[in-house]
Length: 414
Image (cartoon, rainbow, N blue to C red):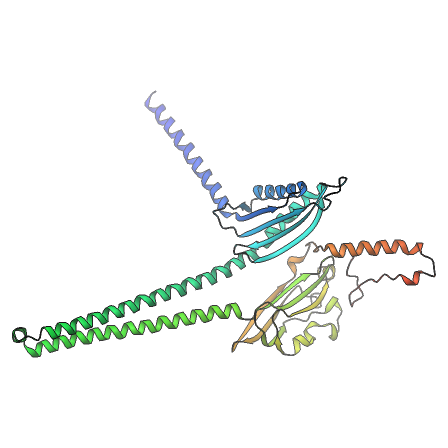
């Protein structure tokens, strides 16, 4: 092979290696951007296992997720529990599955759980829905993991401060031992020969200076111990407060099986919130009806101070149906899509003021939450309505079907 051909061959090999390296680097970068997800399945029914297999396949081919190995910590955990609702019925056995999905954070905090029943023909849509719901819950899981990391970090800081405290105590004990050794040396060196050689006055001055230095070191070490103890107490107090304090959580949500949007104000902490004051920065008229009595800003909860808001207490306020809030003729002065609710309250001698920006826009075009119980009640109502015409006129008064609606007269279920 001639020299130019050899150079060309080597250059081609280098180009191929560089291309492979860049491709591998791009693949690795794309892999690093994926969110780690843990997926587990419990159940022995074949249709449930097919559902689990479809969800696992969707996560495998997703650009946003990656299944975590046993040595990796996932951002979110998804557990699928399935059973055969027709077990024992030879005609319908293995034709559908009852499923329950539980989403938790890395540290095991509960995020959401859903349940349902689907047949073989709906496995793909249900699997797609579960993967989409997992994607929606990623920010919530990251918040739970961040809170857990913060508590763990405080724990490690407290342990480090305690260890530093112990080291300082050991140092003080060591300095005390040196002081005692010098005192013994001073007593031993009071012999006449050394006294005469160095001079009595100079010897006393030297030892006095050494004792002054050691005393200063002792005082400095004691001061550092005091400061370390103060840090430990402060960190422990802050950690205890964060675990025991009240938290006023304000969120909007959609009532299952209805287009109705509701605002929830709840105390999700461990202790009561005292002197709670709620303020809304815009007028919001329920169901778009302009009147003072429909204006949420005029409600008692937003005009008067709540002396004690207990743990687990919750206030619910109807807003309007989604088709009214996001309709083309919706008036933003009656039904604003973005507004702020400020919660000011006291606990443990402290007073805090928290602003909660309520943005309803993300709920536009979103699906209504599903509730199997409501569906079953609707089926029963339909069955009763079919039976009523077959009942005689004398017996119809004994059958009543009640329909529920909002205070605006609009139906909850369309």
